[in-house]
Image: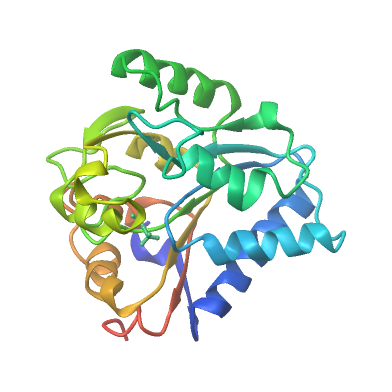
Length: 247
Ligand code: PGA
């Protein structure tokens, strides 16, 4: 266990990261057409989705039997809101490839009752999961999904209050900081760890410190991504900037 089960691909830059990540997902879908893809939002996977769309448009990829499960969604935002993750997925992937919408799942941010929303999403995950591959980014505070630093590792879908650091990082997508929702629904760490494989994408110097902590620091819920050291099949694709603190 531990970092022995982790492969780190060092790529030159974001463009290369996006290509290598798309190739990994394409290989998954080609070898297992009914794969369950755990998908992520944020700026890091944008280039990966662009490459996947290109492969689909070129006739090299068929999503017709694929299921997708998203990591998280802002509480209070639905797919009509351009900052929601449902909207992001629609824009970046769902509307551009031949995915069957009945097999794409995102937590329902419009459900105001947190318990109901999380339970409904857990039922989906129990039915269609585990993911064959779970794509992850990493937050500046070490979060995966919206699992913020805590004193335990949450198992299943839950409602979280976003950290100040996350609100600061994500306000760029909103008109103002005040518009960033304070809470989100996120897949739990247990569910993420039950994915058969993990693809962690990390780009840029500003992630170098947290990436080193996550991969080589102590495994602690204070750095949620550190638990990935215990996953048996993790691939990290990171660019030179993100790896600059790691030999
Ligand atoms: P980013 O977000 O890709 O926009 O940096 C990563 C994350 O918060 O998980």
